[in-house]
Image (cartoon, rainbow over all chains, first blue to last red):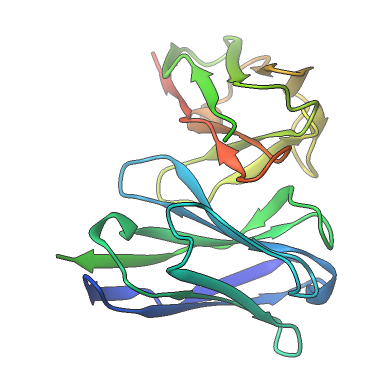
Length: 120
Length: 107
């Protein structure tokens, strides 16, 4: 069974930093690209970032480029999102999501999410 | 950036009725489209991938169709557990994008 467990969310002041983690189990982590998707309170889904299975290719939404960094540690089955220079508009539930292949970006499983609140 | 426009924003139907949800892309995306269901307080769940393929464990009452720029999600006969928000998402081009969602509510 695929399991994705996010952690690291919380309350942070505008301009601050936070690192999210996502521990994966139930599949061969290094064989799959992973993504982060966020959802602001009462709003729709917004893709944030993606990384391929080996970690050598990364992609970002324009809204976070230069401020967020996605990475992974395949030895620990863990995905990360380092978030710097946080803004009020970054307030959202952040979902870790598995994709369907090494460099395939079809999202097939989602974690339960971790809430990030940025106070201004 | 490829914009996905979902319509209608809200669909008010009764259990047993047929639901037809639309997703239109601002440029062609072949069949690189997925549909997700999200219930309040829960993570999204994959329903359809490749525009028309049901994901594992998804009931046959859910079906997807379309290619290019126009896509449809059909729920043939609504069950009580189907009342939720539905999102389409494309993976044809970076950045990945989602539609704004269609809420299927009980009439």
